[in-house]
Length: 100
Image (cartoon, rainbow, N blue to C red; front, side, top):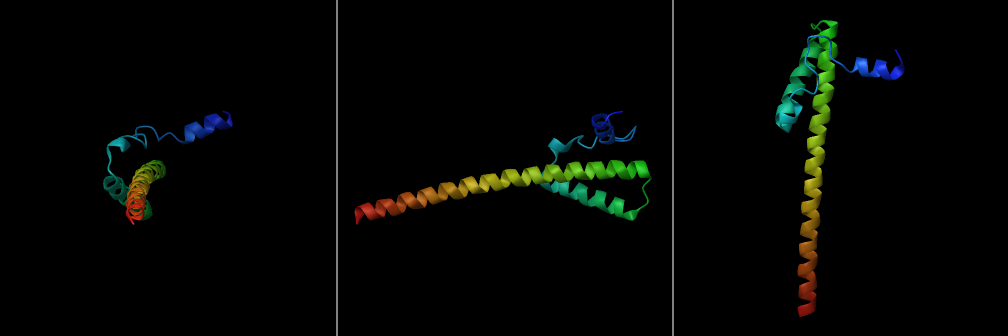
């Protein structure tokens, strides 16, 4: 097994467990964070078998990436809104300067 095959194989969940990305696109930021918090608590509890711990870790990583993606989208939207507001303010000050 080459390094690429090993990396792909290690990213798969243990047999019988769902893939880490299952249903992620349907989750809101709040839902992803809530599930992530629960996953962290389960992992910190230390009672999970190794295979389930690994699957939970993969799922937690996927949840974190999903939540970060949502935050990045929101940040971009805020920056666009702020840029648009600055343009409006600049237009207003330009108009007031022309009138003076």
